Length: 216
Image (cartoon, rainbow, N blue to C red; front, side, top):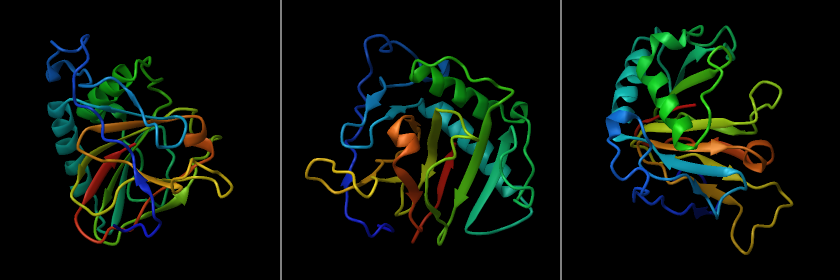
């Protein structure tokens, strides 16, 4: 693994459908599992598995956007919706209407967590493409810029790295270590709020191999 800190993986999500979703088809945009509270992770971290076909469609759309960038590098980004990234980044923000598959995935994520749809005029979406050597340093998302709820969905990951959370220095989490790695799989969407959002730092350790493409 790219992260040298010892830690415990979050428990794997159950792929068993709930009774309410047992007859739902993936094309309907419904999540395939009830939201799972990550008991061994930071408080406020939940996860849900999004439909396979919706994930594939969003992946194709996002990969095309990344491939169309005029730059190349270990970590590239495409921004959608309300601008956040600095103007000297790869690309200024695109309207969400240019990305119908991403929009559909966002709707599926909110429905999967039982949340109302986002305020589309305020939403910020960042597609990130990590290659060998790419990394995202440990940080806490700024509460003055982002809302209290943050979502991230991994569309593809063939790398050795994954989203990792670090407890505050003085935090004691039972007898376990204080680094927690998300069990990433295509379509896994995590929701951050509370301490997972404001206290625990998260990072993407430097990739040694492969490719990782999330949308947040």
